[in-house]
Length: 473
Image (cartoon, rainbow, N blue to C red; front, side):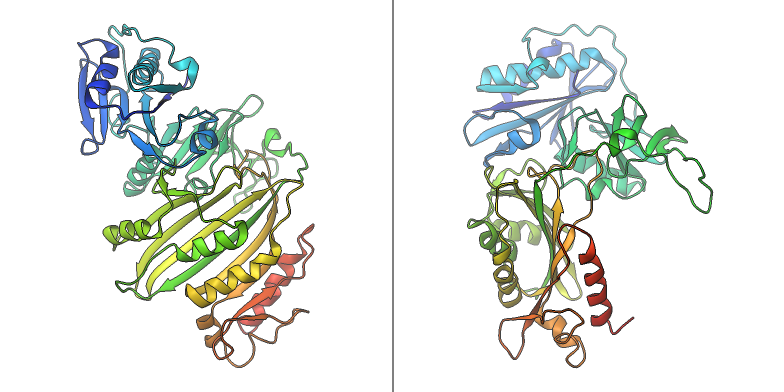
């Protein structure tokens, strides 16, 4: 059975509804709070948590339940309430299911997964044994060692939920990695990929043939010295470590689906007139004809798109950085992550954006120079890289090998062009001259990379351009 159960309801679960749900274990169970009251816990007689319940989240963005759960949600807006059972305790899993079923019954809606929420009856628990502290100290963490915090998730998509974000922050503050274990067939949200791609953090996929493997690198893993670590392959040495690669990771299939990926960075002056997210919205409109649909500080993205509200959140959190996920409408898959940081140079905004396209859908390549010009002339662009990838239209990251993207274009903002001596930025080894963006006296430059999108020659051209711009170093 799943460890996570989610109620999707048309009405907000009020305190009495939540209380009725928490009584799914009978009146003898204890209720505690965690995270300044943001998490309510149903505990055993020893005070150890059986089920942890996140505060209800109002979702005002279409398609998020379908993208992350494969579930049909109530009409917008709806409430998303997560309950997480203590791992390895069957009674706790049934308690979470009954809690979600009661919320769905009283507040109108449904529970995910349906099979976990079939009964409204009190769940007999008796004298159950649960994980002792400190493993239960953070609700999302199942195993805690001196090296890593391990989270077990049985979801179709491993996403950067509030649960997972809290676990990552707690692990980082303790100097630990975060390792998420998921079942076969799962995928990874692009928003969660950066969190789980830096050692010793990992996205770990269960596998019938090889046991466990890293969903991003394919390395076969074993539990060793308090963490999941790669198994050495034949010929591996200390100087040249080579991990075994799982057979499932190598079972790739050709796809005609593609992704257009853009990564750009802007630096803004820190003043009261600054509004963040304008560059992202300009690019989104140029490439899709519409603005983003929604955003949030975790997944699901629950708020309607609003650059002003994003700015307000970043201002409230300053000088700490702000991270956000931005999504598009269900008919045009698009997802971006935005990181806002206050530095000595001003307010830095880093955006990673991707759109998915099917085999019969045309890529908006002619709109790329217009999007670049909007960034260079109105949003203080520093640089941008555009790539084309053979990858899934829905943007989900599978636990299979995916080839790298091929560079299509590189863009320099006006200030970056000005800092390059002489005419080096305008006269490059590329066959095509760069296109000027903005006023002639202070232009940005758009470099079309002539590499064939069907192979990796674009990287050769990109590397040659970078060496030229850096003076041959």
